[in-house]
Image (cartoon, rainbow, N blue to C red; front, side, top):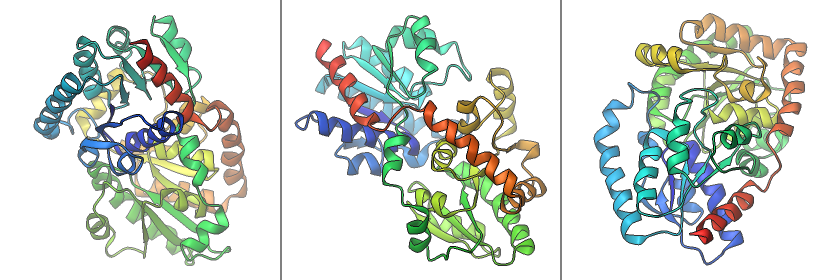
Length: 373
């Protein structure tokens, strides 16, 4: 049973599912996820990816449905008795599910575990009690978990597998109807409705100023499957023309000269593909206050976190203004040195994430955990 609750987790779950199919073609896969996991052969019991929330306060309205889904998954694990349950990120939900599943005697594998090195370090105690094996996406995670007494193996980050099919820059531009010389700004406003509602108006106002300075600029938006096209089109109305590319985030990343990206997995994907970016984020004031107490690192984007230094500009809350976003975007479009500095730094990032083949490596560890049962 594989359990993912967000759009990024759905992608990672699909990578694992394909790995499991390759290593053990006869295995039965079911659980919670989204369209990508379903396409990879997972029988979906539930899909909450479109309902995923941003922070603690934003999640409150989702609780009744999540509780119903939780009970369904517990009942399924109890009655169907899977050989292993694989949890993917989504820690508030999944750590509670882990306790119920482990109590039922089913091994629990955590693929893309909670980022205890960034915030909520106290979760390590719950992970030690409830999780049989952690499969780490970053090399620095494994020693942290092992020191805490949690079995952990570094398998690499699944974006490496997902990006194997990303188009070349030339193919992406042809796919989007763009010539080689046109300045292109890509927009990636996130996969959650709350993110899009908060961030897309900022993006729209910023590109309006960008096109005033660079009249020939074109704009493309990677539309997540969890976001309604009508919602996005309404938020962009009245601004510069923007090409909406459903399910085309990787094509947008490849085609763009610069990206304006909501903080999340997309920042890591863009960095691996080598596209310079400006990272933006907005959340509620209460979530911000909670974060100030809990967050233990100075960055919000995975690109900066993995590199361990400020490579991409991060604009969030009070610094996420139209002036700042416009200025940083124009700098990447007009300053060759600034553009090159990010690309050079991204070359180091690939070495931190392991090698492709993450899905199959993770699959072998999952099957080993299931066999030990």
